[in-house]
Image (tube, rainbow over all chains, first blue to last red; front, side, top):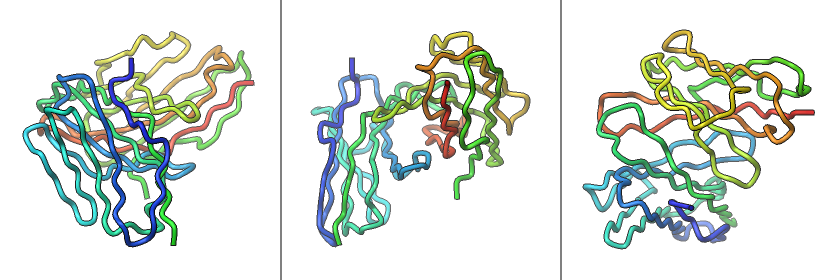
Length: 116
Length: 114
């Protein structure tokens, strides 16, 4: 039972264009969503997050959009750079109102390749 | 550079060996986590420690034994592992008590069981 789905295993874009990575979830209890980037031989690096009380969060070139009614979120990277090439994981947690007992549920990841 | 440090980076051990994985963070985080990641799969939670006490065990076999000796250190003791336990083991940490907080990961220990 996959509660967080990233249906595109890979995505290829040209440098300077927009990259859009998508994520769907099924658990309506999820209230906090994160995106991580992972290079080979490194651990996941936190990129950006969004709480379920918001529908958009922006940090520099990265913007995350949340559509709760559709149980869908997306990560926009603009402009895309070759250094952005990595695996991007969507993750979600439920009931984290400041406590520590929260479990991240990850999607399977999307490999983004940004071509020069 | 990651602020969560894991040692060793690579570990090869036999099924009868006893070894330990170590994780250290100096960000003042009071929650620490162990994850297991198999190739082409997402990380899967194993254990959560909160204020040095075990708060979540995701039904992990007893051949994996976690320990949190202080707020900066997290160990994972390994004994009598099976070949299917070969994976990347990731440690993470996060703040607590301040609303939603992201987990920050180390680079992992790649474990191979012979």
